[in-house]
Image 1: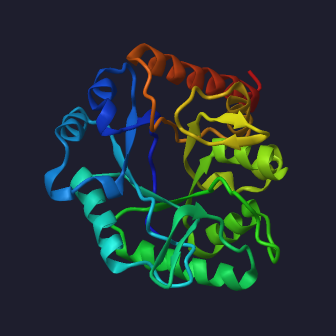
Image 2 (image 1 turned 120 degrees about the vertical axis):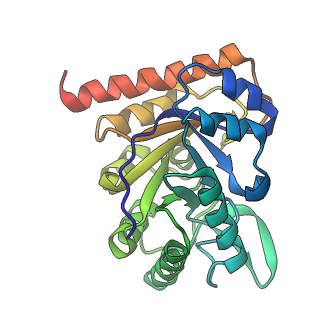
Length: 278
């Protein structure tokens, strides 16, 4: 297991549409970039500028398919590794998700069947990925659109087992926990009580909206107070190494993004005071 010793702070997802905004935003401690959207041999100028300033950049994969029934694609793994090397990243992250089978792409990050049999397959996939990567791997929980009827474990229990078996780090997306609470009735707080937060690498927060009783995790709206409440609950249990705001569409002004980051900092501080009893 590769060791991790990093303090990331508060960050934002880097996107080409807001590259200059990210450069201008005050007090951005780190950024995350979708690995599939960059070429390691020709990094965007904005990412080079941020790295020259000493801002850590984390490659975030969306297509590795660690929850698939087959081993991860060596080409995709090599790309993720090359991104980490080119960016001198402290770690990389991916999703606990099923994305393809038999050459067919799901087109969505689907939940993994949480059975003991599936656990063994996913653990093997994670260990293969860890062996191929030059830095530690963090695994993200997904926003599920359904649950498999044969599930034997909750997602938090499944992730805990994977941490125990592989030493993988966790990327806890509190917006996804909230989405699953609204859509599937799965308590976000109960998940936080089960997740091995001692293995936390960093945290995602993002906005969404409710439509016809279904919560849509859009990454295109302000973070709702109830998602920040989940973040506060997490910070009341552990001091996260980093918290990152995701925003992927309908980008607001620089001032609006800065205000969202301030709301994240406030939730972190409130939870932190509960953690320390101050």
